Length: 247
Length: 247
Image 1: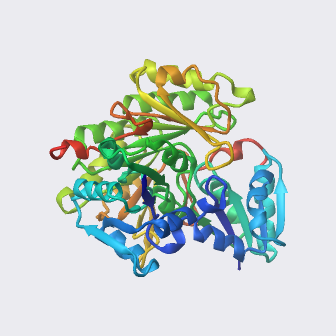
Image 2: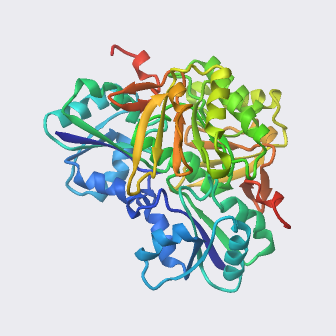
């Protein structure tokens, strides 16, 4: 019985990894993943075998990892952020029944909603939704329905994959849907680019300003609820303690 | 200028902390927080000064931390899970304008949606909502509206604070609302109790079975979308790769 660790490494830097993630990579015989993520972690484990594939070869990469574990190696499959949230844990577990000798262990990591949230302040301090704007695997109608429901519920919203070369204008469409369905144009929003990496930058702005931003795929977007505030340049969604006592 | 680190430590054990969280606690002159969390981290930093207050004294604890930092100490304010998600970063940032000498740094951590998700498999592999069932600070009508919107949007849902002694029956009410608003009684669900701690246990079950469970406040609940599956005893929400190629 060999182990396939599916490891969420957080935004990238070693300081954002959990001890559990580091330990799983140490135990593994081979580190496997998308080239960019392996480049981030390989220097921490000099001499460790690595296997990389380019973007959009997720199924091949997962099969390779499961086959390699089946054949007798412990494998650490590297995901950025969390292993589960838009990560590869799901696909690996879907394929797992064909590899009965492999024990899959999922190692959680700090997803961009949390690491980006910390940069902005506390945008997700109350109930929130996480929605990906990528329609590569999800019909746009489903994404649009979820945006509408997020607005109706007055949720804070964290948007992953706000745009890419092929999907220009998706963030603008999302902002328009949210405003049409009840979010005020003055709703406090924020974005963070290159979270925890060189060149990190962030901005707090209104929803109507966000609609005009040109953001890339390295950016995570936060849209407040009706109670979200901008305080000293930070984005803060109160939990509600201020209602409970003299302030 | 002194620093108040708001530190998310994850579910509790040292292996779930990030290096950034550990480093912030090391740098701090004093560790401050709810007694249970300080008991978890104090043994890692022998001799470090600590300040604890019991539950429900959040505002007093935050004021103490800000005043102590204002007076010249670096303080690490300990939150379980993430610092922002139902954590104290929001309240501290709300109070911060009264303490202009204090630099607040938020340190993200692995919230229960992620750590519990890893135990179950990959329940949050696609768009999801996080909702707290606690009505101590949020009117029940708001919680109910968010549950309805989560069902309409076919989101995966992670429920925090599913019950407590004073709030028996809230999880049952939540399950009933979700079913009434469109989630199938057969929806794949799961729960995890004492995540990452001694006595951790977990179960995968249907929504109609979940409705009959008696769970306590140490439990995190996951409700699938219409595409969530039970695979080899794990709870898995596919991202959709299986539609893209021969399977």
